[in-house]
Image (tube, rainbow, N blue to C red):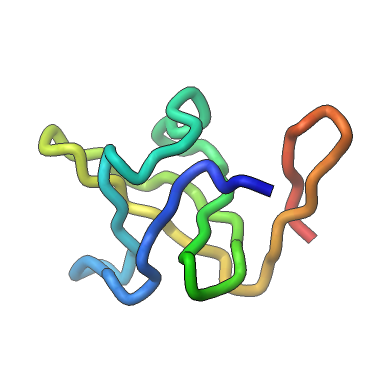
Length: 81
């Protein structure tokens, strides 16, 4: 499964949110403020996250739910488990 956003889980802002950049977005239509996305680190498992901020400079702040891992459905959408 391809994530909606790639991120380095070690890049965290002052509020504790994982940050990603515009060039890391795979499915831009899913990355909306308050929306749920699948975020993955190339060296770790994917998790679900909520987009909590998008700055004018193109930095995306993600509140990652470390307890969930996404599952794919036949229609291509994802749900948390």
